[in-house]
Length: 236
Image (tube, rainbow, N blue to C red; front, side, top):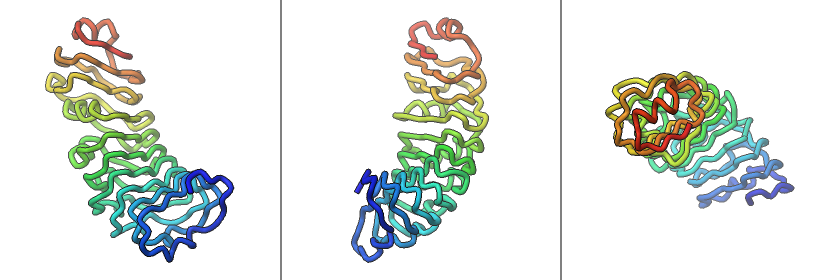
């Protein structure tokens, strides 16, 4: 029922669908009701842009979700620790819900591959701890999460650079730390990290592509970086 703009009703009508595994009503702004009326058999919940839906995400505790998409559902509240033991959860999109979603990134399960918590300003954590647990992340959007901050080590440079897409603008203070000669990836991508500070230092000459678009606070001119990496394509 995705993007049925004129559809009205209450998710309570779904309660008796005891064998339902997928609920997808994205972009139905006139659909309302409480999360607790969803059948607990569901594994995929996609209610993006259903702002009349209300409830606490603790309802999902103990459920075997693979996808949870409640983006723009601004009446949703809760602590992300309810997802910690979901062994199959890969996609989490709680973007633009706001400050009533709380918790630390390290409370997410290691299975997560796609995470959007943009503009959930009560979410906190450091990327080093998160990356040590959630090694499979391919897409990461934490824009506007100003309590997410910390050091960016050579290992994190590799981890971030391997992602298909990321947006870490308007986060807390990130700073480069450690011996950058330990970077192993040939393509360093630190773009969309507007609060990142520091100097890349002795980055290895094996780096063939360097992306720093939006990294306004990283020191060093393009000319200086090019002299260090004469065979590297640099994008700033």
